[in-house]
Image (cartoon, rainbow, N blue to C red; front, side):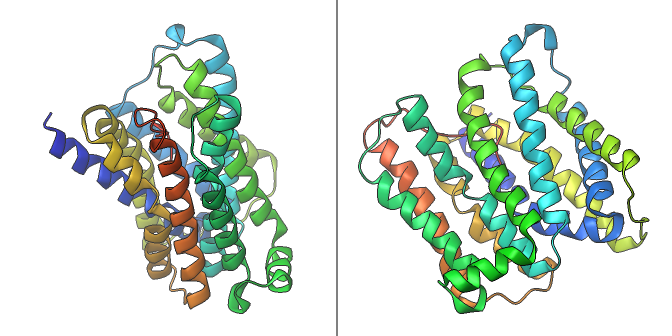
Length: 305
């Protein structure tokens, strides 16, 4: 496959993933947080079976099969439920932004665990990303600890799940790079996530489905964004311009906020957009800090969002 075409497919994956925040929230409004997430991952798993296929588990290192499965499922639960349990469209966008701390955390963890070579630029990059999240969480007051605390305490479950998810995904990215040995268990992991969510749905009280064309269309689009997003990303990483895709992926927070604001009819303040830009720029600086010392060591996550 030509490199330009593969790179374009990889960029499409970034666009699909950017729509996830708004789509998951839209689906949860019709099918409930748990039921909606279960449906999304079920449909996505079916799409992955046809696009990526089911992996040969016998070839997987046992450590990757066990720890990869646990970390992936835990992250996807944190991501989907943190968005599903939000009280409004704006809160969903803020929660999604907290989750986007994972790129900076991944690079920091790579430096600590894998002794990834980096330049001093990583320090201002991480500070800028965290400061951006604080500005986002400050709400209308911008960078305000009082406003941030009040915002988080309105829904500590969603914000807590999003932050936990960012940490879990960073660990997943660093650990699986060591133990996966080139294997890709994404289809299996999606199936396990779907099964876990259905078990949760069956053993606990859940709201009834509110069936509508909007809910069904959102479900279809969310499944496509999840399933085809992974398939497209794999093509881009294997055959495209990895450096361009890695750099473009750090702009997902900005694109995601724009798409979610449109889909959820949310008005976002100047302070929010400033914070979003800071998160993207901080993550980009962290990535650049590794390139400036070791150009070949690009911290690209092959199974990321």
